[in-house]
Image 1 (cartoon, helix red, strand yellow):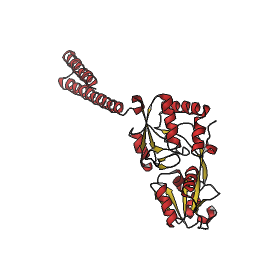
Image 2 (cartoon, rainbow, N blue to C red; image 1 turned 90 degrees about the vertical axis):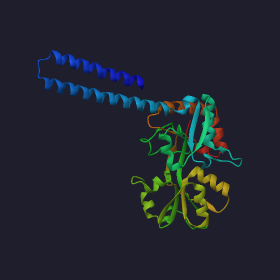
Image 3 (cartoon, rainbow, N blue to C red; image 1 turned 45 degrees about the vertical axis):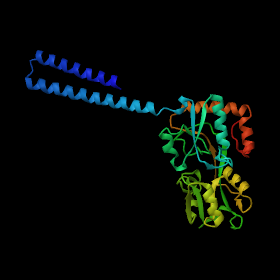
Image 4 (cartoon, one colour; image 1 turned 120 degrees about the vertical axis):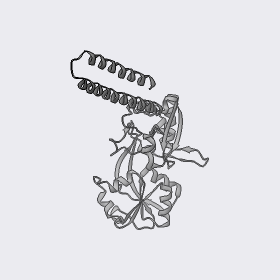
Length: 303
């Protein structure tokens, strides 16, 4: 940046000397020459300021480079979103997506850094370069203009979970009821977006309550503070299996969608790397092995 400033200042001096020479040779009135001199000086000063600003921005951008350049791949994930990302009984972060990210790192020779984030702050984390991607049951549908995505790798749908004793059997039965969703989630979008096929259902609800995580929401559902919970089907199946009896999933789904890895908009280089690795991991059987482990084999969309 200092070199660029020196160059710019040198340009100022050169322009000034040229202006002075022109003044001595020109027959124009002294006041006009002085005015011309001042105009040139102002223009050059503005150029110097622009160069300085551009240099400063370039320096800041260099400091915000992707951590992968240092051999570390930082994945942002929801730590309470099983089976895709969560803390196990040993206090370790694991899940289908995190194990898949580790498999990619093994191929690339990277170190995986697992960074749990608040889901409603995911954009801030990504744009601040605190993470390299969002990889945790991340719905791509409707967000294509906001991120650069990998190829979709899991078919998903939004469903409703209710108490087994609620008497609620269909989506129509939810009219006037209280339904919970996760903050900034695809389920919330499905029920509130003006272009959603389920906007009418969302409008018919008595209330939509937002939660930071689904574990808290399930506690509220069990306590009777919620009548239903809109949730990703993979997460719903995991919760129902782990919590035992007392809950059931309605047969009617709210929608169908796909999961993909989300990168900063325009980061096609990273997306291309991940796409190539996903293809390799699908071909060698790694992805299906992990999918069977986490009981989502029937949801894998890669071929």
